[in-house]
Structure formats: structure tokens, C-alpha cells
Amino acid sequence: MAIFAVTTRSSAEEQSAADIVDQAGDEIHAAVAPHTLSGYFFVEADSRGAVESVANRISTINKVLPGETAMSEVKSFLEEKSDVDDITPGTPVIVTDGAYEGNVAEVTNVNEGEETITVKFPDEPIPIPVELPGSQIRIQQQ
Image 1: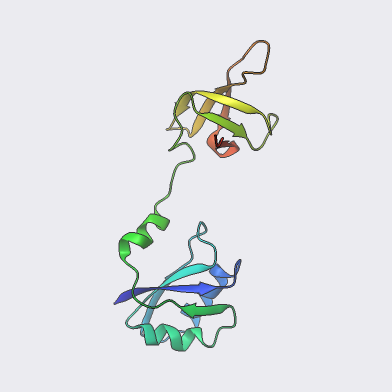
Image 2: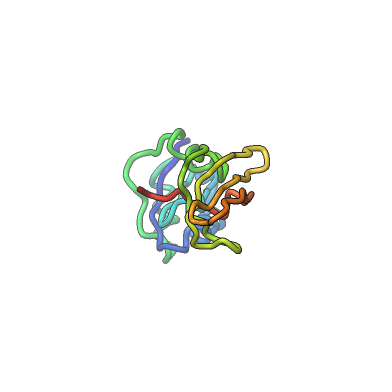
């Protein structure tokens, strides 16, 4: 058994993966379309030929990439990453949602258990700490 990468039309990854499994015979075992990967999905099958024969019947699939894909490459897309993993105190961030949307802030504290961060807005006359969900911020590129 091996894993093969398949290219598909953008925004059709999940449907293409479901279609390939629905139309598959015994040689195709699973398909996964990580939401963080645009235009690609992975298929576990006995051979590349088995994937290609089904893929040729599905209009949203472009092609099966040559060679096998290592499980370590697939795992990196399947591991859930926390919204606050790469954030440390002192990191400049931009608020992307909520009442403070568009404001630049500096992280003062990270609560990994609750996936929240505490920030202060340096442009405010009196910087008051504000706790925000990690999903509402992105790291400011410098």
C-alpha cells in the first residue's frame, strides 16, 4: 500500500476525494483532503494505476503526481495546530476579527490551554490588556 498525491481544481479537494473513494474498487483504501492544502489531496491505494484509472473518470481531478508521498509529509497536514503555537510575549500581531479588527497589538501573555492571548495596544494613551482568542489574530510580518 502507498500514498499518492492528486491535484484537483481549487475548492474541489474534498468533493474530489469523496468521489474517488465512492468510485473506487478494492485497490483504493482511503482519501483525505486537508483543508490547509489547496489544489491537492492524498489517496492511499495499492498502486498508482488504480488511482489513475478512477481519477480519469472524475472531471475535477487534474492528475496523479508521479511517485509515492511519504507518510511524514501527509502527517504534517493532519496534525492539528493550535492558533497560538507560534506566538510568544512581545510578538507584534494584527487583530483580524472582532471589536479591535485591524489594530496592531503586542502580545503580553499566551494561554495555550485556552488558546487565548493577552495583548496591549501601544497606540492607546492608557494601554489596557485585552484577552483575545488566538483565532482572531495573525502575526505581523516585519
